[in-house]
Length: 270
Image 1 (cartoon, rainbow, N blue to C red):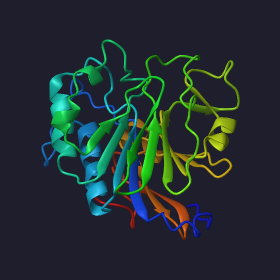
Image 2: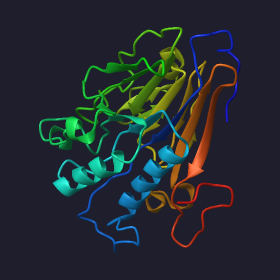
Image 3: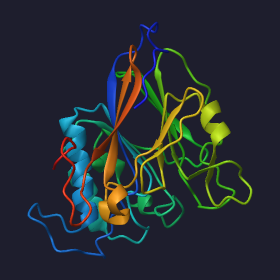
Image 4: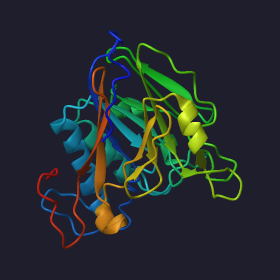
């Protein structure tokens, strides 16, 4: 949790709530037995749980920070499943690709019809980065589409100048590190997080919870909502409150339990 009072004097800001997920890795080629809700895989059940969370929290925004799909070869039933799930929520949905569902000429995102997904569903599919402004909730969301997961891909390169009088939110898929050289692909530098000016940075790529707050930016890995992918430390999503009085508050919510374990008392049960 992180609370501050930097925004108390900004009368233009209103309290909003967001849900942040990433690394769902939908792919029905790896089918489990369907559960009582008809989900075909652990990943489908987890994504259904994230949508449930957005509904129960009455979140204004649902942020999906990459790797919604496990690869660009998934069949169209996976896309239809996402349409069906996102139709259940009234949250505005913003999606970026990750390293598993990169936005190249063979991308699954070339088959994804955002019009069919609904007017409330938006993709940030520009390789140079783009901003979506949602005036009704006074939020700007920036992110970029990953074309290739490589050391030369910089997820926070080209972030826009911060604008006062609205909430500034960023999305990035990559590895937080101290330097770009010799530290793997799609590096996200500590200094870039600090300089971004985002009130909240929703990150993906790491399957467990991670906190990387620098300067005035609250930056989190929410981890995969699929506990099976991350062991006992996985199965989570983040709920973020942006409040002009309380600042930015982030809570980890358990979406799915690891096999053989119950969801801890006091956490979300689906």
